[in-house]
Length: 264
Image 1 (cartoon, rainbow, N blue to C red):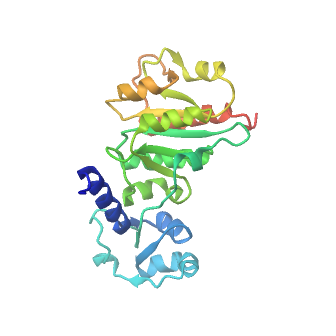
Image 2 (image 1 turned 120 degrees about the vertical axis):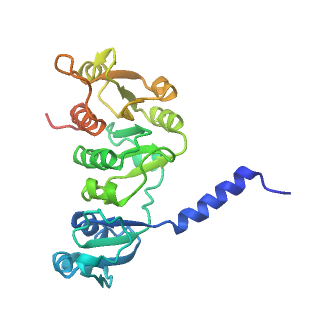
């Protein structure tokens, strides 16, 4: 019996993913990837100066680097990449699934859900904030969202190696699963009927999912409908709205303080 086309496409995608690689660049991103035992590392290209700065990380990784001239850098990355003399070819990280990564502990949990946020610089900055405020994961869609890239990793400044970044097929279904685990889903939108502070004051202290949409389109209808609350970050006078990465940082700080285990 012939397999359905969707099954064949899924198997092809799975095989392709096994062979997918990306190049990380910049001293911070490369150092943290070298030190990450979860990261499969394939090829390291460094200048003499970068090799000296990364000496301990290179030794810990067990890799043998290729030395390259800074003026004719050998790694196949964009010419305008700010590589600081270091580039590392790796395979994408596998963080597992939402259920394993986001299960509440002692009634606490914090996750960030990104609805089609495709700018790698924004996602990288959000990963940094998520790590600072103890988020269990940043969850995004498999399509129309920023994948792991060198630009994302450099903006994340190492957080990509430590902060779970989960890519899922159906965002609304993952949100429902999180709600079944006890999470309250709060969508951030400039037109929200109440402020984030007001919303957090009315919900029980417990697991929170912050849901943010792409700049411009914002939250899709299905994503918005799956949220328990829609809240806004208050702005002075008629000022517009925050960049999505800044909104995530503000939201994470507020939601972190609302966690049961947060310090007063």
